[in-house]
Length: 65
Image (cartoon, rainbow, N blue to C red; front, top):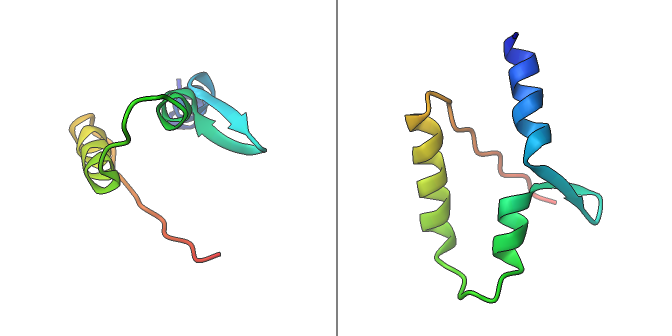
């Protein structure tokens, strides 16, 4: 399987759309759960560390709307 096919498979398996915006199901469930929200910066750091540990290169794109 090519890198492109793997990436598309990873993206399509755990994503859904909310108001037309693609979002992972896990993140959507966390956003709308009744649990107390955590620190957003800690979440981003943990997410980028997990990506790096899995051999991927985390990229953060900041876009001013």
